Amino acid sequence: MSPFRLLLHFLMRSCIIFLVLLSCFSVPFQEINAEPANLNGQLNNILKKYSLKNAHCGINVLSLKNNSPLLQYRSDDLFMIASNMKLFTTATALEYLGPNFTYITSVEADGKITDNGILEGNLIIRGSGDPNLSGRFYNGNILAVPNSWLNAIKDSGINKITGDIIADDSIFDRIYINDTWPKNQLHEWYCAPTSGLSFNDNCIDITFVPQNKVNGKVTLLLEPNTSLITIHNECIYTSVNKQHTYSLYRKPGTNDIWVKGKFWTNAPKKKEWISVHNPSLYLATLFKEMLKKSGISVQGTVRLINKNDREATLLKPIKLAKTTSTMEQSVYVTNKQSQNFYAEQILKTLGAHVRGNGSTEDGLQVIRAFMEKLGFDAGKYQIRDGSGLSKENKLSPNMVTTVLSYMHTHKHRKVFYDSLPTSGIDGGLHRRMSSQSYKNKIHAKTGYIAGTSALSGYIDTSKGDMLAFSILINNFKSLHDAKKAQDAICQFLVDSL
Image (tube, rainbow, N blue to C red; front, side):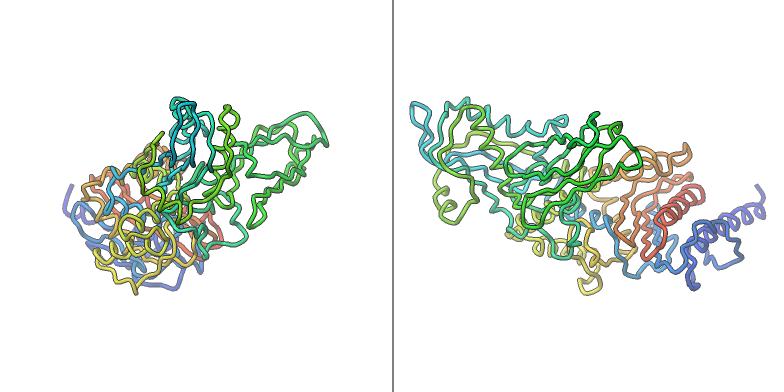
């Protein structure tokens, strides 16, 4: 190819990228900086249908091959970043704790076990903040972990417990909910509370079962089925598809759940998730019920650990069972499935193990220390939680790509990279950029809260470069257009750089 044709080819590519960016972001003109040229030329609005008039948009793109910036558009502006906050939380966890950090949840007896199988004392479930006590890693079997404990207790010969079932959640504080989260959504699964002793993502699973019983109460299956939860079922079956609409709501400060509306008789089964109140008692209550059903009597109550209990158990307790999981597993679920509960558990884990206090604020201080290491002063941004649900998180595209660039050469790079959704394959990108040209080329964290759409991660280009990118959009009118704009930009980056 002649030098003239090479130059023409480059200019055409450069203009295309600029056209995408300008047409996506129909805001008062601001120069877009790009390397190796400043692209400020002739325009055609090739993506008018993705116009985001009056939206606040920011982009930063780095070449990781050359360690140089390629595109910058309002890259130092602060944005709400939604679930892109999880990139900061998980990167910090890998930096300070590593993928092999192990959560250990144990079942212990603090008294004597007599020859005839009587535990003269309490049974303690000692939490570690583990977010993985669910069916997620047990083929969907929610009760797999507590059943393994139950079998261990049976094997020990215990048939009676004279004391209480104590939930030891002391690894974390008991501030379960972030005060910057939307107050009218706290019953939703994505607002699940944190706890030092958690179970099933601190949610109850409620499955609607279709039956041919018009005007009859809908059949609901609860997993796990525990007396801690009270269901007020006011939902009935309907034979009319258009009437198929229902709602679930948990009264604040209680575990009373109201189910209202109509469920179509020909609809498929539908599973919903509702967060629980007072999560530390969730697993302990369920376990007492499981003990009773298996023939092991418990004379005491279910309660939270207190100071006297902690002092007493400084003596050598009898360890009956334990369950473990790793930070690698937790990081994977956090990013791949965008699990808010996991991110908040990891945040408090950072506080507990790096600063000695399992609180949200102590976890945030660890992230701030990580950010300072990367060159960002804490006064230049704002973080309020670990998941991104808070609208008070404010960070820049440049900060996001700096973290991505740092993790690209990190010793735990693979764990971080593999946790990100992959275009056309899984996570939040399984239906995005799925054509053969772009499938498996974009590895990025999605993010959405009202008024915010974010996409940040890595791109494998057609020319063999690896890019770190962040596209943050606030105050848009159409989420569909925002996501399409992000996809269009990523596709052009794959093709053009």
